[in-house]
Amino acid sequence: MTTNAYLWGWFAYLLGCAGVLFVWWWLTRPLAVWAKVPLRIVLAALLVTPWSVSPEHDEWAPAWVVSLFDGLAQEDISLWRAGGPLLGMLAVALVVACLEVWRQRRKIAVQ
Image (cartoon, rainbow, N blue to C red; front, side, top):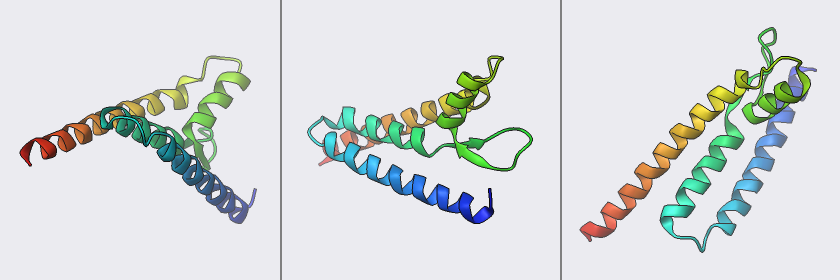
């Protein structure tokens, strides 16, 4: 794959992510703040976390795709090569979402 095709592939993927996140934002509008903020942040983290395609290559892909491919196509259990860091990023995103909900509640309580 050429560098140009690789970059266009990432551009198309990120454009699709923006569309998915916009629809997700619209679908979660009626939810309470304590529910919609974590749902939005966790989905964004899931979609845009990158990971190396393989130890031998320099290319990167979305971590959920790498994890899925490794889990389904590899003979040994290599799902955790990208799945572990992805779960770590999702945990960080959840902590950030909880802090944001706390900040918003505190801001409302002060007013």
